[in-house]
Length: 105
Image (cartoon, rainbow, N blue to C red; front, side):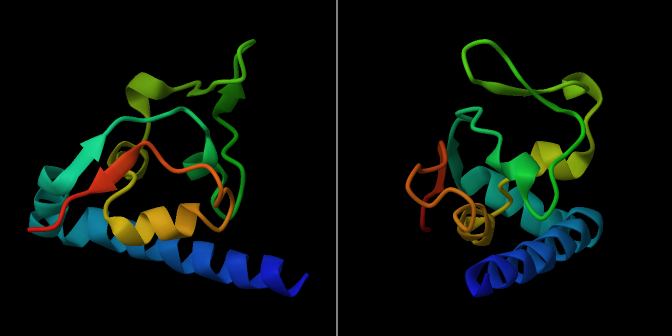
């Protein structure tokens, strides 16, 4: 129970941080996008942070996809913004790494 509450607090702070970064720190976003490498593994974890997104569906092979993929919000397109987002993600699925990583300068 305690771990669950702690994870939700981390996830909530992450959602607020991502919202603020996406709307007010455009230069930071561009810097981080240049450092980001890899690709989405369609695990759906990013869409389950704090609350499950109602637009998330699962196909017959177990891959997740967005019902509004072509029109999804900027916060979704940007995930993960930086390594902090990967740590937030790991509060849900720590044993399966995200398909994205960030290289150091």
